[in-house]
Length: 180
Image (cartoon, rainbow, N blue to C red):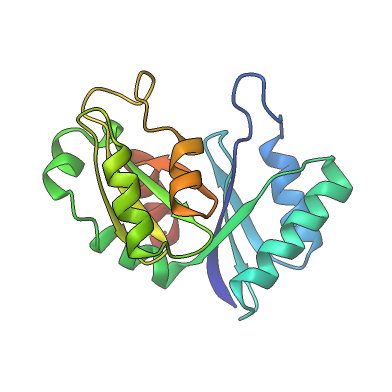
């Protein structure tokens, strides 16, 4: 069994799809994944799964969540070893220490093409900075996320792939949960 993280996209936000974390854990358990745990209310699930391709786990979770919970959202799966690399590959170490609430990790479905990352960088109108690494995008929002024009919709459109974001505090909580 492999320790695995599944992140749900756009759940439990004001006006968005509501899902109980106990229900989410039950979905994982019914699929045969063991030790399901959640943190926060934003769709962060950790569990043990057989060594299956991430895309297969994502598809199984999505189908089960749709069938059992009426939830229509994307799941983004990473193995524990991938999460360790995500944390250690963070290019914004200073911001991770001094202002982790304004550092966001966006987990992406596919690795973006370099020209798409360049197009996204050129579309930034504020002080935001970003770096892409594989299927991850690290973003610093020095003036906060709420007023930024660097939105998920813009990011996905420019990169040509879907994703879901977590602030660095949540990224580290997930890392700690994996280590426990």
